[in-house]
Length: 308
Image 1 (cartoon, one colour):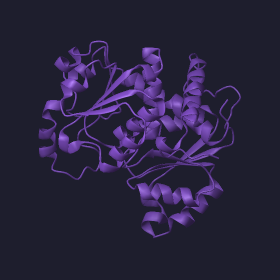
Image 2 (tube, one colour):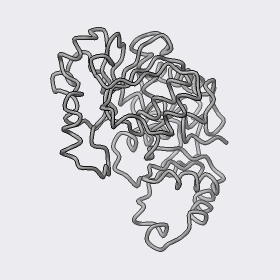
Image 3 (cartoon, one colour):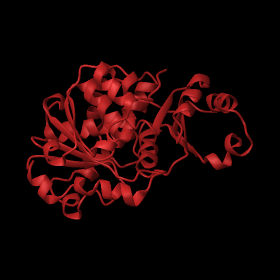
Image 4 (cartoon, one colour):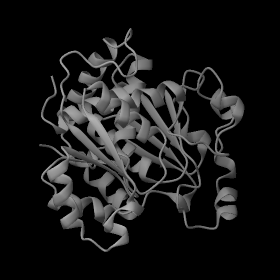
């Protein structure tokens, strides 16, 4: 049994094994329907329990299809229906019930400590579907998409992030260290990664550079990532923050500085990218979103110890 909470805690060789497995699984599904099972029905009889404390579209859909294609089933719980939030039942007691009824637990949460507390008491794998500090399933899938489109290891590519320092960037930084790729981060000075992330960068051999000028950040880029400037439950002065990021919009002129680059966005989008970029040939956001199914299948198999 293995957990999947933060890319920082997972060996690089295991992350690569997940990507290799996902590529094989995607290749053999070209003529199959969404709910057709993978050969061998590897997770037949297994139940994935999901709980979403934050809004979800892509994570919810992709995990449903992932476990279904592996011949398992999923049950989605609403936190406002549980005693955990309504009746004050402890995480420990909730975890014991989840472990008795399910085979894996996927949690999308607004509290990192809650993930660790569940991990402490669960006897089944837990997967982080998004937390305030990390979005590991998203970024591992993004690495898969980059390599699929560019047809080379990500270690040989120049990656750029333009936007706020959030949970998605934290996981991208961790991926940069795990997969040894160059990462340029473009953001206003007061929105740089926090002290903990900066210390993590310094403690590891890395190829990460922070720029406060988006034009410098995109120089030589093979891939440009972005995300919403105003994240879910972002408790800030929204007008001021949008104003601070005014010069960091992904525009057609900015993309012209790196004509070979593809554009990726974890969605949903906001005003941080121009419409003519989002719908351009450089944009690969729909392929990016769909690939989450394939990678999350292999993440599930990793957690169950059943990677091929």
